[in-house]
Length: 160
Image 1 (cartoon, one colour):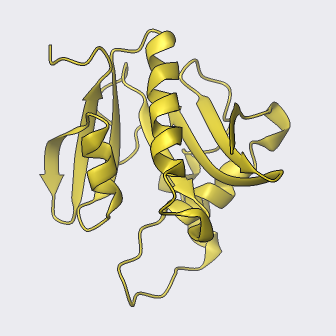
Image 2 (spheres, rainbow, N blue to C red; image 1 turned 60 degrees about the horizontal axis):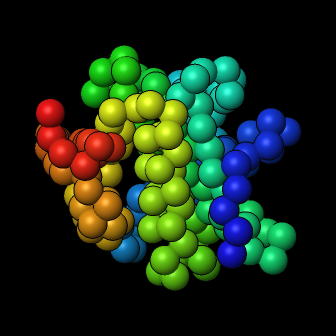
């Protein structure tokens, strides 16, 4: 397993992993792939690389990209303020449950820390098992909305 930064010519991979990031409760059929063309989802990948907080790490196994974690400052579901990057993370289904997501998340938190960010946020469905991974990595629930939670991680390890 190799974790590396995304190359500029690979940003279309964000569309693949954004679709994979859509949480589906058991028994729910996946939405049509065109869902990622909605304006509220295009902000995750359009013109990626144009902002200072546009950072992406890929997980590669046997020369196959199996996962991605990326950050940007955007008005997404996990938006906290205009200085805090939001995270998106996903893996191809067959690679989940192997610790790859945890490794991607840890490496991204280190990268954001190195880049001088104080905190990072994300939005997660409360029923998503990944919520436990986020809590173990230091994320705390900031706000709950119906089925979602906005979580925040202080990158210096302590609250302000």
